[in-house]
Length: 317
Image (tube, rainbow, N blue to C red; front, side):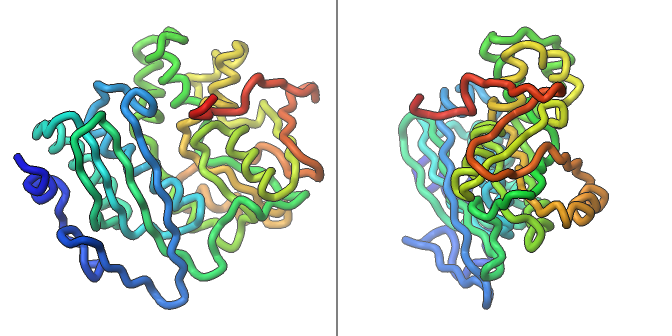
């Protein structure tokens, strides 16, 4: 099977939302009047972001999901994607399952694949995602203000717990691993939440490298500090028993791969945020507040500061 046969068979779909999609030297797009184009890219590398024997359907899902999460964090409506795929060989069964996982999630969010590239090499998956947001309405990292509430969606730490089990750092029961594995292998991008937060949140980010690291990006860009209450963090029943251990705290605060949204909202608009879970069926938890200064203090129930050795994942540390 040639490279072009591969593209035609597994990755060429109709793209009515584009002027021109897959099949030429470039795609052609027309965005709506009064809209801005939000663009992001994420790379997933075998052995770094996923295990070499990862289920291809779930991998197809996650490859797009982590990019959709960036659109969610910007309050953008995802529209188009480019996929670049390097792989050791053209395994047709693997490609069918991977593309099924990718396009199943794409269909749920109205995303069209409009181009990309394929080549032979170590397994490496890279998506460039594009979305639309009204001019001036994008959620950004630099808008947090002292007095804002800090919120997170969903729960934190299950993906890191599942990964720790796979790496032999934790030994989970089969039931516990089954409970937390979907957070690692099939994250749910919070696109609807991002759209709901436009005009409400002062700042937002998706939690990909760990809560402390990603909230830290908001604080750095906003030139502000934060205080977080550890006992307020949304933790699943699976992770809860491990919180007394350092590795359990790490999963909750710095483990990464959650792909939840962390966002700040003026305390005066708290009631508006509290209505969103009913509308979306997604739990939201207020975990702290933005304060003057810099850095993030995580406090235990008695007010003492919990010191973490690291704040989150860094590819070059």
